[in-house]
Length: 109
Image (tube, rainbow, N blue to C red):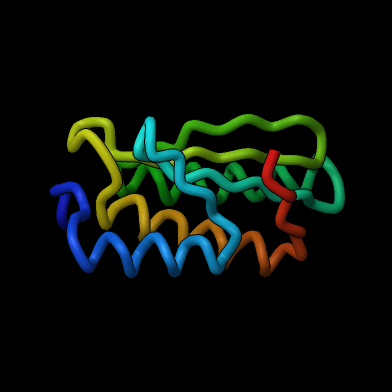
């Protein structure tokens, strides 16, 4: 998996795909952000534990925040200085597993 920052057409396509899935790009920090609302704290924390194991195996860790049934995430590859395929892969996995747990996407803000 590439740790080179995304650029050109690949970057444009990736950001469009992410935006369609509810991810927001912060160009200043070159990171993507998203939040979910789960049924309750246990479901939110269970999702976080599941993602933590995936992130640990990939050696790619999210910046995240949990308040009761909500989880907010920011992804970037600090070593590469911006977004990479590693961020895209983890974002897709987060989306897939959040959907499986019935999570709703939080509105931006």
